[in-house]
Length: 52
Image 1 (cartoon, one colour):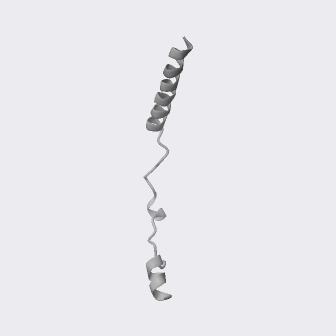
Image 2: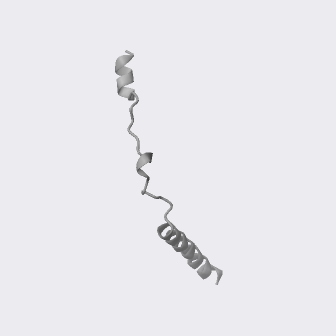
Image 3: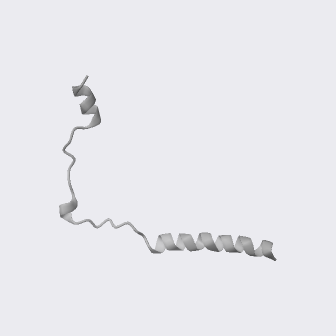
């Protein structure tokens, strides 16, 4: 009896975790416009070329 319950319980746990990750996403791609910025620093390749 215990051998039959354990796979069902583990499958239920996997299903529950999958449902939670799809139903409650934590990422929000709607950023305000003032949050955008452009990289203005020196890239690593430029740094290496300038400091040879």
